[in-house]
Each structure stands twice: as structure tokens, then as C-alpha cells.
Image (cartoon, rainbow, N blue to C red; front, side, top):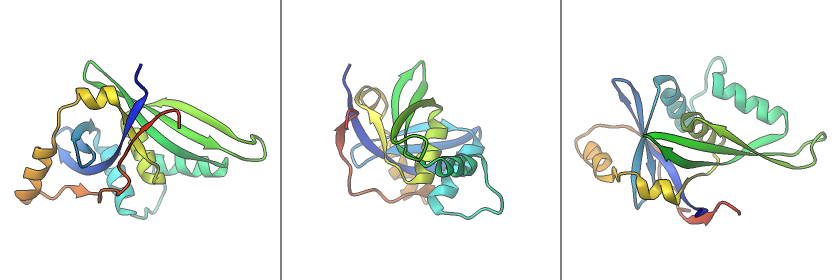
Length: 166
């Protein structure tokens, strides 16, 4: 199995009739993962650094990680089967109970993307998924040209290909 991964960012979040379309990619390619409205809103709020009166579910998870001396190190969208994406969230914990521990969790891509966005952790896509997804760069560009203003996060300068073993 190829362990090459491509670094990606959330490029835009656009409300749809059934939830939200999250555009993920880099300068070479963009693809869409559809998420429910609640998670799409959370991702948008994290992108905008919106302060909330009360913590939402992803805020609670972030506070829990911080309290345990842990943080999201990275997220990898690692598989695509029957139009369903799969993701792994890698957490680094270092506290008085655990000297240093790396934990890898299976999670819904929507939740993993929200947590990575909240904690400003890098996101990656496996080479296999990257090769399989349709490039939606033109769709995103056309929407922007037509004046549809999805929530867009500026592209990182550190786009790269790397290996999961790093």
C-alpha cells in the first residue's frame, strides 16, 4: 500500500439543500466532501475564529484534549469506499500520566476536518483517494467568478507531498 499523502486545506464551505459542501484541496486539485449543516457551520466558525457564547461539541472535544495535555497532530483522509470517505485523526498526548503517546483514531471525515480546522492542524489525503476523486477546481473557480461567496480559507504556502510515517 502506498503511504504517500498530499497536504490539503479547506478551500471553501458552501451551504447546500442537504447540508454543506466542503471543498478540500490545494493549488493542484480540489474535491468535495458533503457534511451535515451542523458540522459545516462548525468548520466555518473555526475558519473565521468566531467566538461562541457556549461551547459546541467540537469545542468540548478541543477543551478535553487540552485538559489532557493532548492535541490533534494531523488528520488523514485515508480511504474512499462506495462514495463514503474515511479519515484518521492522529493525536499527540504528553502529560504527567502519559510521558508521550501517539493515538490514531478512526473518525468521520467531517468531524476530523472540524477538529483539524479548530486546532489548526495539518490535513492530508492519501495518494489513493487523491487519485480517485474528481477535480472540482473549475467548479469552485466558476462559483467565485459568478459571485457566489463560499467561506474560503487562504491557501497555505506549505503545500507538499509527504509520507504518513513522518
